Each structure stands twice: as structure tokens, then as C-alpha cells.
Amino acid sequence: MAAVRPVGVTIVAVIAWISGALQILGGIIQLLPGGGNFGSGLWAIIIGVITIVVSVGLFRGSNAARIIVTIVFAVNAISSFFLLFSPFTFWSALFSGLLAVVGIILLYTKPANEYFR
Image (tube, rainbow, N blue to C red; front, side, top):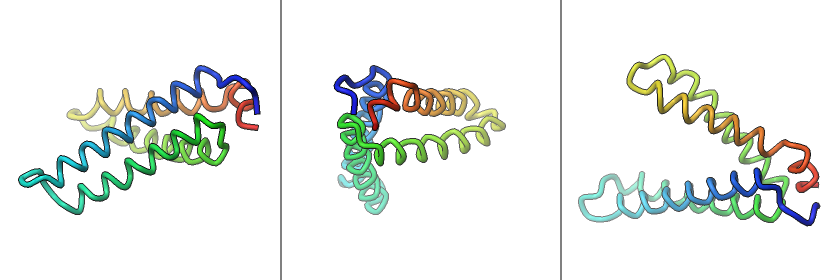
């Protein structure tokens, strides 16, 4: 493993961490009275915790975390492609899909590959 974490890996890990924190916050809000569906709130918290754990793995150079993030980003990019055909979600789907593709690229640059070895 390389001694210095590449900037691209740090960016992806920070975005994943923030995403997990927001999922947990959203889940807590759903658990509050009048907040929404209890089951959905509980699942959001679980997914948020898993997302934060995976982001910590990216910070530490875990190749397993990189593979998990790659799979999630690939699914996100594919689903975003299908949402491009809806006039109501075009821009958000385009942004989400591009962000996923950029994230995958950042995780597989030469410095990132060296970091995850």
C-alpha cells in the first residue's frame, strides 16, 4: 500500500462518508413521530452505517471497500441511464450518473491502484 492516499480516493471516500451520514440523518427523521415510515427509516440508518463503514475502508486502503463502492457506483450509473429518458429526472439522473462514473475513474487511476495494493 502506498504511504500517501491519492486525492481522488480521498474525494470518493469523503463523498461516501457524507452520503452515509445524510442517510442516517434521513432515517432518524423518518423514525420521529410524523416523520414517515418506520421500516424505511430503519433501512436508511442501516444503509447509512454500511456506507460509512465502507468509506472508512476507502480511507484505510481496503480493496474490498473499493470493490463494493465500484459495484454501487456501477448500479447507480446504470439506473441513472434509464432515468435520463424521463423529463422530470433528466438533470438529476445526468449528474448522478456522471458522478458515479467519475468516482469509478478516480478509484482506478494509477496512484489509486498502487494505494489499494
